[in-house]
Image (tube, rainbow, N blue to C red; front, side, top):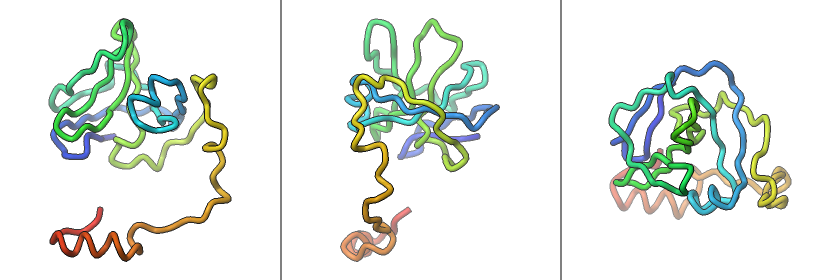
Length: 142
């Protein structure tokens, strides 16, 4: 499977063996992504190939995070001394095949954000103010 950052500067390919992924709720991941959690796919580093080395942020004394310094996309997490790495599910070209199987860092979990199925839903491709902005910019939404 392939994936990469928003601007396309950094791309990767990785051999995927299962559809299992997980959500991390730890404070470090919350701060690194600006979200209440992050979805990760754990992969063997030996199965991962970067088209160009990502930029790295050493987020602690024991871990580092690949990202794109041009567009800011978080691409994953790893312990340098581990044989595995985590890739952000959202950075895959087609993340739809993954399913969450566990939660990690639950001491920082925000329960109100877990089940949002009862909330109203709105399509971005039907939201007039957004479409007007794209039209004025001469582009179109993805």
